[in-house]
Length: 370
Image 1 (cartoon, rainbow, N blue to C red):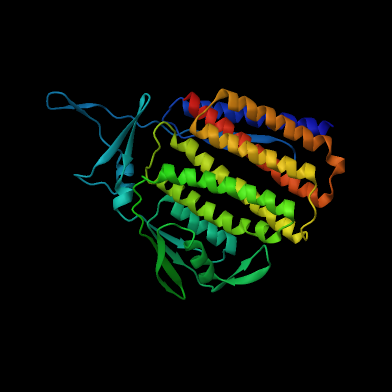
Image 2 (image 1 turned 45 degrees about the horizontal axis):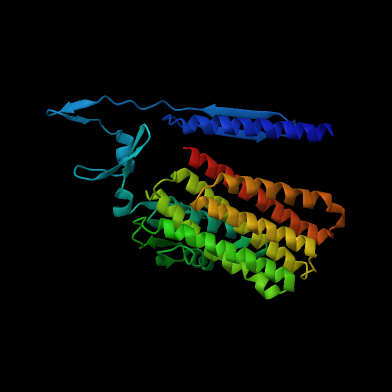
């Protein structure tokens, strides 16, 4: 009991600190904050918040009524700016955001050595560079095979790279040899497709969750197994959307950092469905009880509520979500003893997704307030 109370207190401390940090950032301070939360074996919580100096610039008068400020040299060098280049100026409250569009017209190149990485780490590294907005990724390696930890087997590295690039909209491998390859992005990256792509992600995700329940209901392992392909498709569009945001794309009326967070959370939600599907098949498709199917369906319903709130926030829908969340949690906790072990694991996955969706609702409310 004492240990549970300590964990509860620690969780509350973390929540309070994260709320405080979010409030500081939301105030629009030009300060970079880094929060380190590290719980170690002696149950002590170490927290460090660091801030960098605010860059100040004097306003200069040019001509009769034109006011100018200089740009920081480091920022200019990073974005390869030169005389005559155009910048976007975006007004957000009391802040004026200067956005370089050169990352859409100049090729940003990243050199990456993936020697020694496993299969999943290779995928994450390449996808991360793509999401970050790099146009040319030059990859170096000195081994032809890498380990896949989930299966324990060896895989051809170039096959993994090709598999990964196929999930990156607009990217192709333009050259390769025994020691490396070059990936290049050919998409326009205008950002015009961001809003429509996000809607597509929502619709694909809700369709996938519906198919998951149908598969469990009918014990249809083929339908359940399609969660792998569905995951890859959704992840592809999420990567493309994140890339557009990092290239400067915006949706009117929504903060980019909130959209970024939502996209990553939707990626996590779909990953949980995929993991649940894999385990279900590995368990030889056990019969799932009607009460469990009902809970999964209700959690899917919560995802649809969030989807509706994203496009038209409504306090009544927010209250409805809170009510449903509480009822679902109660259904799970009150009947824990009635679940079989394999079925309980599925419930655990879905309960985690409910928490992820709730986090999305909180993020959306923050965006609406601002």
